[in-house]
Length: 331
Image 1 (tube, rainbow, N blue to C red):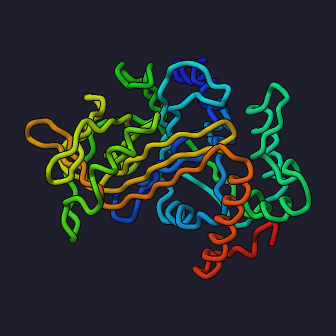
Image 2 (image 1 turned 135 degrees about the horizontal axis):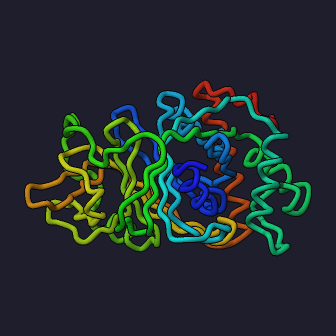
Image 3 (image 1 turned 135 degrees about the vertical axis):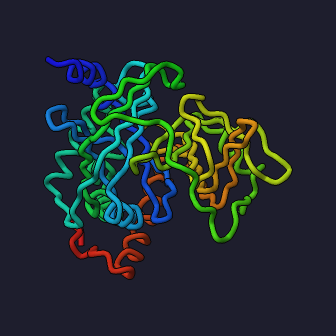
């Protein structure tokens, strides 16, 4: 066993056991969008991670189609079987087909259920058959079956010894330069805040998991833990991130903060895009340009009702946008 394989084997618990991970995608303008996805497995032989995405989230899939370079961030141990304190970023290339495969999805769901419900409890988020009756089977079918499987072949794995990224990282695969390339061109609409910075700061810091992402030197997203330490009069947010990861210059970047209850039934999330600046003083300032946030209480009835509605509306929009939703298994 070579050194890289030995190091990778020590991360197996995290890569295979974490259930909630963050997907970092590159936007057409070289920004980064951070969204949560469920981890459906890790293949150590091929160094491949797997997640799924419903067709209602067609914009996410279209971004992956345009630019398959992404990062998956393993940063939270709640509700999974992962152990240890490592903060792990898998940078790789995504592959998926718009065609859905119900048999493959069923196999993934079964494995997910076994990992997340090993004590014999049945999850309210696994399959329509678990949800109680003909109506819920019909209402939630698109949520489970009108989705695609995304596989990510790892090009680089960056593992910090603790969740705060304070120690020196282990890098498996391609060599890594933590600092991004030179500053990006400012947006045509200006670099200043476009949404309320004070409100965004309160919502962001209220979440237990908070991350900042930007495009690295070789085009893969770099993602670091972040906290808002203050809000300036101009509405920009002062950020604190691990010094060894703090980027220089100016660039587009994404922020996300999130919380999930067991089974992802209860959820809180805020997702922002904006402009990140490293000042001459060393301060890291963020001007939020967009903000999307929501809260869902830990209620099975709410999860079933809202989840089914959101996905059905999203799939209708996907069809109007030219996405081949007729390939869906429940169509």
